Length: 434
Image (cartoon, rainbow, N blue to C red; front, side):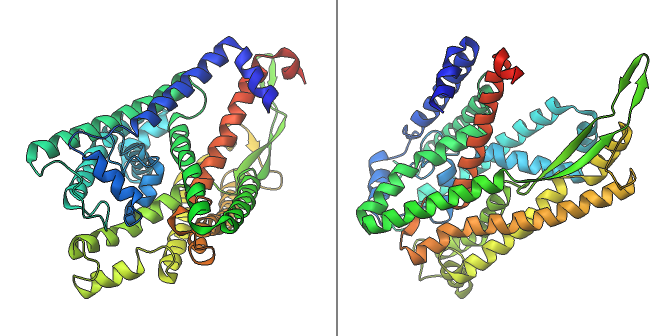
């Protein structure tokens, strides 16, 4: 590994890409510590370090922003507006004819531009929500200190504009990493945000729960990482044979390859979907009850008691069912057996033992459903690990290993290392020959 890093920095152009990536990631992390205008940074830090306040339903989003959300920094929204916009564009591709046409024609630049416009709208909506919650004190339940300097309209407007500008800056930085750096920019920004919270979480567990619990958490984390690496690398390979074709004086095809179908085709998207959907009733109940969790109508008290705490059995059950359901839903949208079978038939490819066209389409759908069932259960189990830890290890919200965190870190890490290795092999003739 050390030799690979040294080799990457020996190549001038690859070294430039790595330095650009590291520089942008550093700027992104520095932005997490700069409070937005109108925020009383001292009170926010007192609330966060006092132990009595947490983000509640915003803990997941706060993890994706590297703690910037609850600190109300200029990059508090992080990459979530762009991620949400990208997911919505993928969903709308199924029902909007215009987007279907753009996808069929390969006009990715136009789709990307539409995604940016939608990200701006999502940023404005999220910024308004965060500022409103900060003004009312619902952003950090249990904290009695004021989080903003005043309740005036201009102060709120400046805060909203600052958060929108920060989200657009993050989107620009992610695209610049993809264009001029190494790896997928948005994924690396999320990776940096998630990884930045691990040392603090582990240190808090060691100080508050004891070093015995710390060792148990570390052991569970290592086992989880090994499991995730194994599953993320697993795939079902369907053999595909291309018939020989004579084009002019050249003979094309005649080779055998395979179609890889990953066990976890949905990635971390089902976890995001499930967390977002579960946060809606919690948000409504929080507005209904105000800052006092014992006040409000009975339905709001039931939601607060059963659907906001990760260690509650009802929350775990609903969370797992949502993840499994969204896994099938997302794979059904992104993996299209009809289109793949059509492309294979168009270029003279076929699966041995199956006729091109409908038989191949049915085979791909059958394999996809079986693989997705295993992948959905796997995501559900991984997502439940931190929730179960709340009960078994009493690690509270500081348990870092599990759910979206491990899926993101392992997936992005493996993909980035692959890209670095591929670019190194392109620049090394002996390695390429081997």
